[in-house]
Length: 165
Image 1 (cartoon, one colour):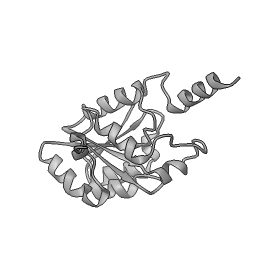
Image 2: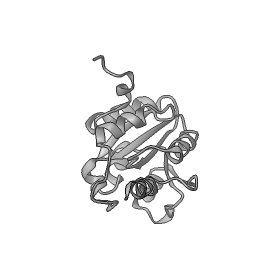
Image 3: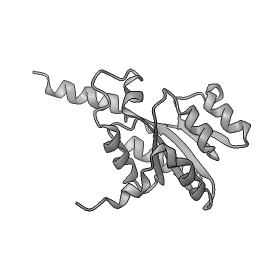
Image 4: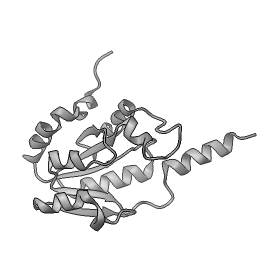
């Protein structure tokens, strides 16, 4: 089977800095992160809006272990890290996907130094350590409102309820 073209957008963390530096030549680099377990319209809208804030969008993906520590449920993530990375890379708005093992993307952000940090509207940007790091080197941080009614957790519950006798 031939290698997927979108695999060029998936970058192991040790090579992520070099890849981000190449992206930076095109203009501001936007960074966001998450589990992105089951992609839905809310994710697609959020990532598209994030991408509009710069020339490229880098997504820091929670590794499987990191995602499990978030407490979303014993069977989460439903899709493994490699599959989640491929789905994100398939989106036009996403320029690069890398991952992190830690509970937060703080170390990854410190390494990559994105120009813009974006989080979902449920975050108070002023209290995040990631925001402080980005602001300290002259970047900016911005929250993007969620598209209401879309949640992987809610979708999983809906499926579970539909399959109960």
